Image (cartoon, rainbow, N blue to C red; front, side):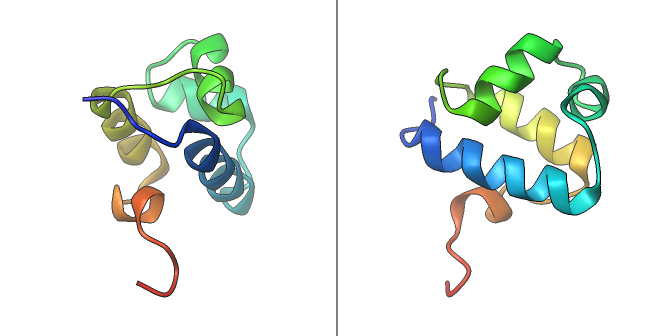
Length: 73
């Protein structure tokens, strides 16, 4: 299963990572992803699978809801 709006996912991921005070390298390492893969996901240039999103959520100690739900939902 692939994410449909990769740009929106990347923007949310960037905001969450910045809020946590992490570098892309730190987030990528924690998610067990290469820095290039993580950076491409964050920039919204690749369509990523649910497995990678789950890895990122675990690494950033967030739920998938923070990616997929709007703040007012």
